[in-house]
Length: 225
Image (cartoon, rainbow, N blue to C red; front, side, top):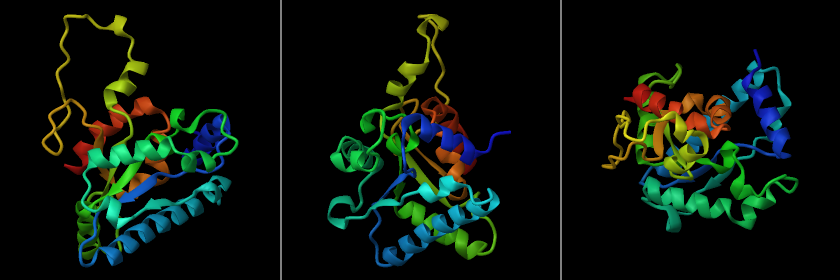
């Protein structure tokens, strides 16, 4: 069976991309948030190092680039929808394009996860990390510590690319099975919690195929409760 790193290597080669990783936005700036956020990022880096060892020092891990935005003046207390907008603006910027000088496509049209989904570290994320650390400092955080994944485009825009309308009866109604988030009762609001320990490379590789978002969204919310 092909491994996650091997799949990612193929995805990147198909686009001539030289770097990968989720872009990270920090919106939490409480009294202890600097220390908490540093520990949060360090934990992610340790997870990457562990995955690198497990996968026999696969060269793809040398191409992971940490892109972190934490300007308090711009980001403090922003909600997911605002992060989505900022991420979209970045993807359309020269700064994003400069990271992939050999890209075969415009970066803002890229289907790879780096330019379709970002991580949002808010106070809830930091609290979940601290709680997991205090409850089980030596064990996996998978079921308790989480980070928010925010989709750059509204889910219905992605859906239109993959759903064959002829497969559905025009009069048939599809029952919404997604949970509401932040008071939004749309079928899929475009962001969800996901276990911190599954981010790299598992979730990243899965989301390099945009249509996987719909399965991912259901699984993440059910898993995190």
